Length: 281
Image (cartoon, rainbow, N blue to C red; front, top):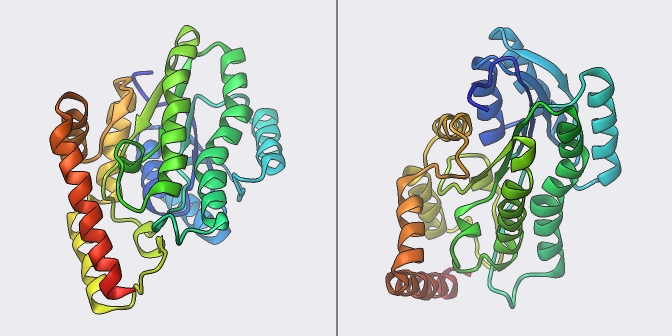
């Protein structure tokens, strides 16, 4: 896939943040869109905005990607009305951080259900029809820097994001014979609503120090619009690994070719986070 024009593109998590920006950017490139998100009102706003800008939204339907039957129902509607999609972008996700002794079973379960099983449900429902259609296509899975690095307090989140990375690594070879490309997006900081909703277990987010940390993260983050442009640029060039910030790309290179600085950095981050937690819990 070298161009998105005249392609049918399905995007999850399209109500806000990166999903919304990807929908706007894909529409600007001439894609016909199928949009979904669990947030019905935000999804409708995205669809309406795209239509007002002259883009084509063929279907915008609220769906909880953790609900297998709901995803299958969406797939039935899409394939009956529109046929198979050409591009599937798994963007929807949630995040929770915390030391392992404070994470609850619900934290682990939700990370895996939304961030890993959600994309798997979409892959099950939409990739086999892509294969059968024989037109080729592309699959985009949004992982995270936490799908590359052992970031402190990210065990539950990383379980889901490393899992999605593993699925993508296999499918990029399995789907090659069908001319279906696979891209794994590993963003660093992106200034999306997820920043304000991350569940940091054991930290009082209302404390001034915690607020300063969030503000520092936001200043460092790239905008979702810029991240969307970088992702689509990578998709159009059939790149497997797509980064949205240079620091993650460089860090991943260092991790692979010269592990000691990576090990030192992860230990230092863990020490810093632990001291912060002890002071501001």
